[in-house]
Length: 337
Ligand code: 13P
Image (cartoon, rainbow, N blue to C red; front, side):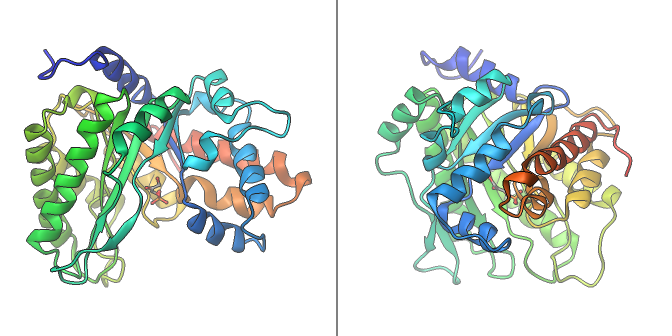
């Protein structure tokens, strides 16, 4: 039985199970306006609301997307936007049986007293914002905080990250939103994979300690971890098998089987790397649905193909389906490059 009774408990569990359904994962398109600006600049476009809407419309009207995608994470602006024909983006998703989600954190700021580390804003007013997002059709939420290995991480930064995630998770569940719990352990650094494993174990043990202390219903959350890899500047790259072994070791040690889904971030891996690593993790049965919640690893080729031109929309949508299908196969452990 769930450890906390709430009018939303059954619905949370159903939502989480729908998102963690076989062969499907999350399309993360919750770039803040600042980050969206960087992506648009990479293809020579200005960071206007019109361009952001056009790009999101391209993604969200891709025919057949729901075969591979079970959830899509929006930035607040996108939740209120529609297609140029006037269909709400939320309704585009519903037609494809894709659950709408919303990024609710307010971003990172310096953490005083730490080793140049950061903490995540957004708890003030979160309950009322969450209730409003639910009314707009959102059924899950995301809160991304980061942990830096080269900066320590300090005990203070890890504790703050874990506590913030747990408070956010409890508030989300209270308002009917399944919380995606995302302490991103940044890839930056020249450390070996063993060091990432050690830090990831520490971070996840604290996250689960505080989730439990806040009476969060584990059956109604999803996780968004970084894969356990060597630092990006480490001299040796690891194979998908090594990454899968280390990542699954960490998860088995730290994540209860009550959690329905593990939806990895891509964190700067190439599209094919992210797919191969996910595929390697699904070569034998796991206690949880092990899948993807990729932004860059689903969108890089789409953006390059689109170039902001209406005549390229169809080709760009095809390239989205190619990556989505590849990751769907990887979720099932059946991808080959
Ligand atoms: P990437 O897959 O690009 O790392 O994005 C992760 C993320 O948190 C977006 O929601």
